[in-house]
Image (cartoon, rainbow, N blue to C red; front, side):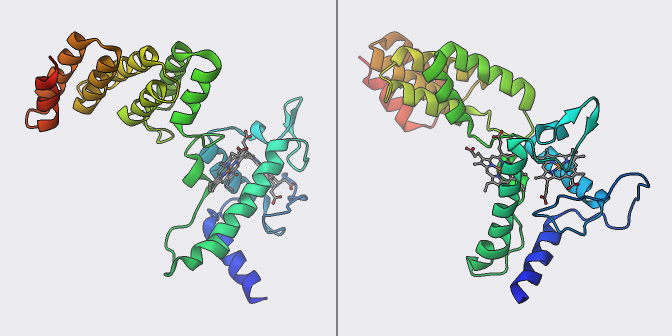
Length: 241
Ligand code: HEC
Ligand code: HEC
C-alpha cells in the first residue's frame, strides 16, 4: 500500500504535530477517530482541534456537545462534526491526490484556513451582502457590513476594501435595476473607504444613470482631483453638459 503510506505522510505534514511534547495523565485516549490516524494521542488530537477551531473562528462547542460543563468529544451528535469529517477527507484528497497533479512537487498544502480564513462558512463578502439585500434591503446589508468589519477587520476573512462594495453597487444598478440603492451603497463605500478615485468614478456614473448631472460632475471632479492624470475622468467630466 504505497499510496496509503504517502497519504499518511501528507496528512501528518499537514497537521501540526505535537508528538511527545506534553502528556496529560487523566485524559482518555481518543476512541472515535474515523479520519485522523487512530493511534494519535489525545494531545495530538487536541493540537489538531485547536488549529481547526482557529481556522474556522469557532470554539470547541461548534462541533462538540457540551453537557453540564463537560464535553463528550467522542460523541457524533452535531452535524457540524460530520461535515468537518467530510472536510478533513476533502482536504486529504486535495493534498494527497489532486495537488500532486499540478505538474511540479507542491510546496504549499491546503489547510482548513486556506478556504475558511477565520469564518465558519467561507462565503465571499459580496455574496453575504447580496443575500442580505435580497432578504432585508440595502440598509440591513450596510449595517451587516459595519458589524462584520468591526469584528473581522485585519483578520483576512474578508476584503473590506472598495471592490466588494463596488460589485454590490453595480449589481444593484444592473441586475436589480435599483440605482438609488446602488448610490446608497457607493456613498457608503466612500464613507468607509474614503478618497478612492475609482469609487468616485463609479458613483458619478450612477448619478448619470439617475440623470443627476450636478452630483455626477462633482463626483468626477473628486475622482480627477485624486487622480489628476486620468484622461477617462477628464473626458467624462467635459462631456457632461
Ligand atoms: C469544526 C469542527 C470541530 C471543532 C471546532 C473541534 N472539533 Fe474536535 N473533532 C472534530 C471531528 C470531526 C473529530 C473526529 C475526527 C475523526 O473522526 O478522525 C473530532 C475529534 C475530537 C476528539 C477525539 C474524540 C474521540 O474520543 O474520538 C477530541 C478529544 C476533540 N475533538 C477535542 C476538541 C477540542 C478540545 C476542541 C476545541 C479546541 C475541538 N475538538 C474542536 C471536529 C471539531
Ligand atoms: C477548498 C475549500 C475548503 C477547505 C480546504 C475546507 N473547507 Fe470547510 N467549507 C468549505 C465550504 C465551501 C463550506 C460551505 C459548504 C456549504 O455550503 O454547506 C464549508 C463548510 C464547512 C463546515 C460547515 C459549517 C456550517 O456551519 O455549516 C465545517 C464544519 C467545515 N467546513 C469545516 C472544515 C474543516 C475542519 C476543514 C479542514 C479540515 C475545512 N472545512 C476545509 C470549504 C472548505
